[in-house]
Amino acid sequence: MTEKIDAVITWVDGDDPRHKAKRQAFSTPEMVAKENVAGDTRFNNLGEIFYCVASINRFAPWINKIYLVTDEQDPHLEPFLEQHFPEGYIPIEIIDHKTIFRGYEKYLPTFNSISIESMTWRIPGLSDRFVEFNDDLILAAPVTPEDFFTEKGIVCYATKSNYLLTALTRLFKRNRDGSQAVTYKGTMLNAATLAGNRRYFLKMDHTPRGLSRTHYEEFFTRHSDLLEQNISHRFRHATQYNPQEVQYLLLHKQGRCEVRPVKGNLLYLKPKNGIEYIERKLAKFSQSTHTRFACFNSLDMAGKEGLDKVIAWIKERIGLRD
Image 1 (cartoon, rainbow, N blue to C red):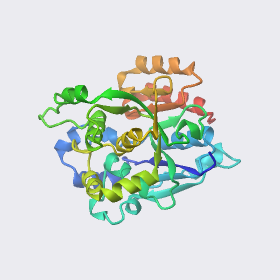
Image 2: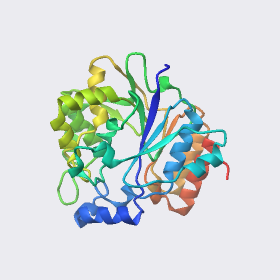
Image 3: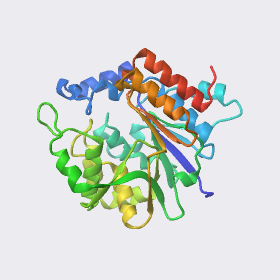
């Protein structure tokens, strides 16, 4: 493939006092009490963005440009990149939420990753094919464009799962107050319903995702009501759908989305599970040279010892030297 492919990273520094103040102004104690809606761990910042960007430079130098989507913030990556990539690094452009929400400014500020990911295709100058990252993702080994795109379309790392069985199970997934819990799987089920898929959905895992800007543009132009519905919530809401899942399902029906297994490709770490769990996971994946993606969910819950071990592993894997 010779066409340009950009990377998009959604990032927030939730420790920034200005951002905290905005969050508090629009949230309620009940929302903050729900970790899956507005809990602090969803916004805490431990410098993950530095490792995400470094991993792209190390293992995907073919990326044309990195767009960093954020809310009036700047992680000041240049000195870090100049230190570790003195021979040059992939250009970075910071994109503010106001840019991608142009025409929909009434829904800002937003603290909702689902809403933001519904709008990243509106980045000015974004390549037609792009790879989207959350800031807690890194590349853990060299990748090629063919790991995300095919001649016919795009690649989705997922498991084809039963829609009805999962939907029935979801009925019992509730918050303590009885309200419907906001879950990653739930947003995929909502997407499958929207896409007219009531037999199966593609159970995605936490990997970078190859996406089509053109497909998003065509879909949301036809269904502007669905776009506005999804971005109208400042915090995650149980009625929202995963926009990436919608794209994958619709393209899968057309034979333009290839589903590949997650197993063997991903290290997914939940640091809150304790130091022994962290050590066991890292030891296992230190032996693997083919695991290409890694996700470190809620590093702030790892504790100092666990955090030190995780960061040391990341630095060694990416090849960063102090």
